[in-house]
Image (tube, rainbow, N blue to C red; front, side, top):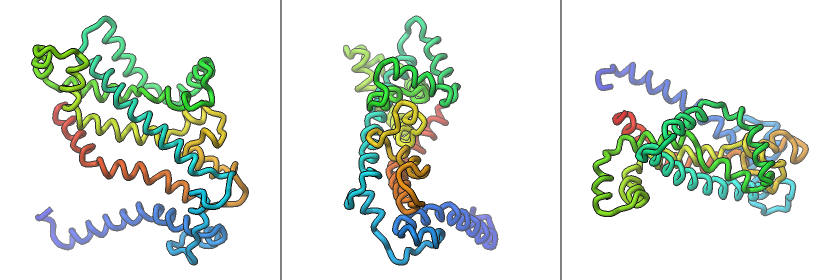
Length: 284
């Protein structure tokens, strides 16, 4: 970078600024529109300065005005609870499965790992009908159990953890076994703390995937507001199912609320995510 001439540096930074503006402009419009009235949002859709500032949208979102047709806070609560449960379940169960496939020697181990790879290769859309038939057969259709249970274990997460555990020296575990530690104790107290980069990577991917999940919730529920998440709720708003009119401020305000948690989690853990990816690349 130091060898680049000053005009080339200026041109490079100018290009970066242009791309940054192009990337951020839609988000700025989203924020500005959420503080506009419906009429102003239609009249001046690309304006970044609300005139005047209208808080009616955020009052509706936070339930400060009676509006039973758009229970955004209920959607937010559903999203938070489901995402936390699914993320915790995936991190724990994917780690257990990955460790078992990496360290335990049992009949059918190769077949199970091949099955994990096979599941990863199947498009998610192809599994929607089997998911519906299964949850309907189990009698859990249109329940929180149906929304959570099929997402608790993820084939990609099992693969990530298995590959990481393969890179951990087995001598570390042998020392713990000589001290009398059980298999689970060795996994929990010795190996799992060493897997911090992989765990953080899996946490980010699981949080983002479960928070943004749409097709699964669409299939295993009837689409009632009680079982909607923010993503399915915003989709209902965009399709016009929950009220007449454009409702641009409400739609973009709810969409903004959907974006914030994923962005916060990623920016809070991004250095660990990048470090985990780099370590995985070096070990690979």
